[in-house]
Image (tube, rainbow over all chains, first blue to last red; front, side, top):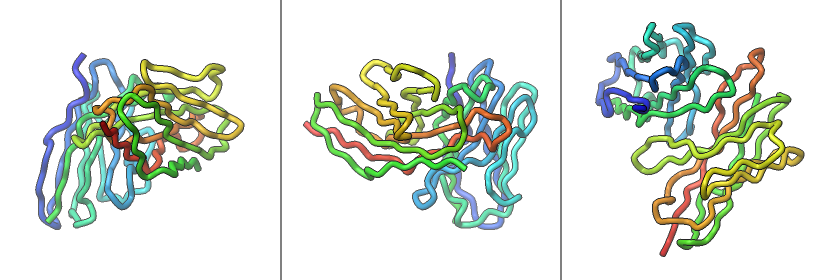
Length: 113
Length: 117
């Protein structure tokens, strides 16, 4: 089975722009979660989608949003980028039960200038 | 709210030796899962091992084992016969299983393991 894929792998944007990141889960997985990883804050949960519905949300401002499509692929969007949004954004998929292990993709490294 | 504590920012171990990475957690949820992930410098988080809170036996996966002490709320990762390729960041994580809580995967700050010759 192919693993979780994320595109693009690297991205450079300037302040004020918006960005969309994409995540394709492992085939058959219905849950997709997003995490932000920075040196200062570590790994922080952004949101989780299951069957096209947001199941859980972390403590991030409304500039961070996401969605999931009927094929379980997910996108996250960050509007009005700030310097502090520079981070590694990791996507993880699982079959869908809370007890299931989450498997991560390679991440998208976003740099905001 | 749940919290994961990893008190060892960095560890060194010689090749072929065993090493223990510490993890303690705090949760009021009666049912939860504990996970360990490895993150090489490439950035990808690699799942290593899982332990359910009601599992009677400690989990093992090849060279990885989890020393689970529920009363102490600790879930230490033991890597036997270390290899150079084990050099990476290691994260302990936990997720409660009750849907009524904010059920998310919470990570510790990580331990950087360096395997030497």
